[in-house]
Length: 504
Image 1 (cartoon, one colour):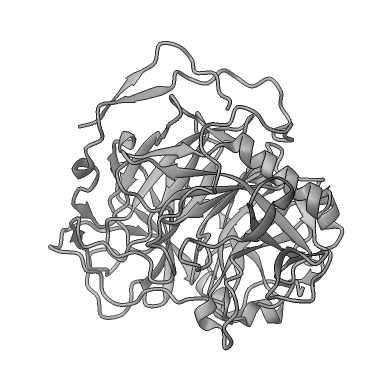
Image 2: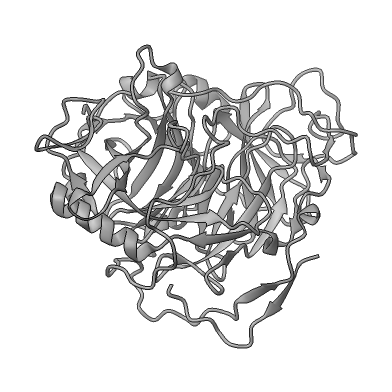
């Protein structure tokens, strides 16, 4: 068994077209788990489907053993090894001045755990019991950073060639789309027992079937005081599903929707494109955020920390983008064009692009882990990024990674980032996960017919259940209002909604 030894010294941390565009469906069918157990989740407002039997919720229970896991069928290209950008190896110790938290008197972190002994992967693939979250040793999972200093230098070289950086404030002044306040009648009926808030995308974005919303984060993640330029903001990631296109376009990677929700009756937003700098020096250029197979990065989860945007890379770890280095293109008339050529700067028809500056990849010694979602827990000490695995059976795991909010970097031990802790969730089809004030929240799709459920857990305890929409995805906590948000992915059923957190 892997074990932890506490360091005696405190570690010092370094830490458009702008346009329409829809979703792969969730897996359906029965849970391939094995023998049934007698565990039952507590439900608050989510009635059991007719014809099932159980003492409380009417749901059957089951166990699932390792070896029966199935990845998310809606994630194209997830078998790729999502390797580092060329020339970005090593550990960054430098970077730009970041506008992170309002406070400057940061308390000293607790002694950092040091992982010793090789991880035993068999010990973090135990038999799962439905609705029971079982803790695991986080030392089994490890990430290593690429060279962030080199990545920042490459991004700056790209900006020098493409044009100067623009701030979030400039983009907020150019929000060109209007959302529809409230939920559709279909989704509102599901959420009727909750004091929800939310919106629908405009008609083009709500129905498009080759862009799918996935990850969600916002200004309450990015800033200690919850707002940016005095505004409540959301970011939502969408991946480009080329299989749904009628033509044969290039994969356009991932776009972000920057949404101003300061006034829920007058919501405006704009799309930006995530890009990967390529080459070096005077020949630096950029490409879409795709995987090695050529498919779009799934971007199943995102979280905004200071000026950095962490994006889940399913088979690898995280890609990190810099929201302080957004740049403006010179043309947006060709949605198939990307990069700098012929005196033009194009980003698949989008006016603004956000460059990648680094990655965190699973180490060769790490046990396997998938990154289907990510969220930030500022209430933890130290704060953590929370990741989750999508599996069609019960063996999906949740891992938490220590992060230093001042530097916006994951906390390293000798160049390696070890998970603070982990757990096997005991739930199927996890699309999002977050912890807040010690409670685990799991966003799961297709739990009762087409409907999702939001599960609430304490470690080594049984779940409580909240009704959740059709097609739920990643999770985001708006801390000051105690709202938990998700974005629903399916075309013509898309809503983005938040409900009051219920705790455990």
